[in-house]
Image (cartoon, rainbow, N blue to C red):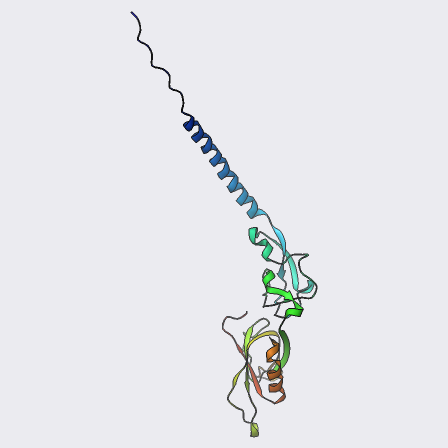
Length: 209
């Protein structure tokens, strides 16, 4: 008896083999991507951090900076690092102690429109008024017989550089303040000081700029 012919063996379709190969490629690519992300996250770079609070207009030098190693990934180029700061570079905004120094927060001194003045507050200075604090300067022009006009805002945007409180008199919170102000406000501020106006410093909500 003659056995019936066996059915021909089916050959594996080419597209099935390619799908298998593509699956392997995708798995390898996924593993490589995870490895790259983990490796990049572990890599650190040296950048500058503020060793103390730096106020606008102040020179950013070795005495006000410290080098720290941090993992910044793709945003590393946005921060100041050794070799990137030119001599005479100043802060363009308040940089708080411990904060990494963004390149956007520093600039050339020649481009600054800020300067400093020193005044004595006629009223108590709140404890929140410290180096780096954002404040308004209010002035009440002097009248006759020790009277003063209604206070008004003299400088709406100032930053405290230093505060020297006078604790020698009991119950007194009188203070001399060095303030960073726009150059456009210097003339009016000096005129108020020379004219004997009562000057007060008022903290701005938000603390620092």
